[in-house]
Image (cartoon, rainbow, N blue to C red; front, side, top):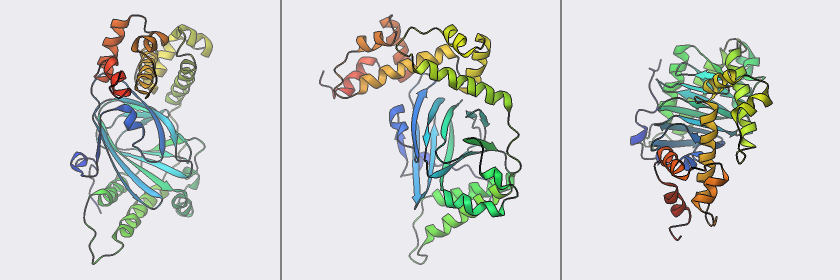
Length: 326
């Protein structure tokens, strides 16, 4: 039996890993997804992503040093499976995630949540036929066809260790021996077998943590309401009235679902919206106009908040977006 390993220990030394210091670049670095990312704590982002693929199957390994809010659509043709390094603490789609759990997405689902601290993860993007072939061997095949977009499982620890070992064998850079043509096929088969053994033994998946899911649903509805009114002078009390919830319940919901208060999250959304506009090539805008448009009327405080969040002044972002020509 394979020993348990952390698949991201050597990621920063991986020659194929891409170092990323900007949230917008990180959006496009994960396979099978179209993500929007909000940085939840001030600091300079330091992330690394490495990718491996064989046919329709792909693996992404990642590390990141700051808590981030992540949302976006996943591959409509393939299943998504997340495996997390020791120390991981996250909430995705209302589900608590740590290194003992497997995050399981249906094709076309939406990844929506946040991770609380720096950590590493591995995401497997799996062809649908892999899952379909596992169903006859599963004790509870309904566990593989969820009624929701996403679910977490706490699988058998030994089987999870086998999957980690198979992932490590797959992603560790090593030359393919001329004496062993098709070595990657063997590695994929070993990983597929480990995944099949783990998934085929799942228990009933419907023991949901109802309170966490209710908080997630409320926070998602509130976020949607905020997003539609980002350029309006929106009060959090207005959000509560619209959703028919108390301020205290909304606070609980946001802290459970996204790791920040609703008012701070609204401010972060607006800061990111300003940043996207300033980075847009040829936008013909100014820092002042974009800040005022999104409600930052105290410009010196806005500059402090912006630099604290992104590690650079808004004028530096605008200078980069215009190619240093204005």
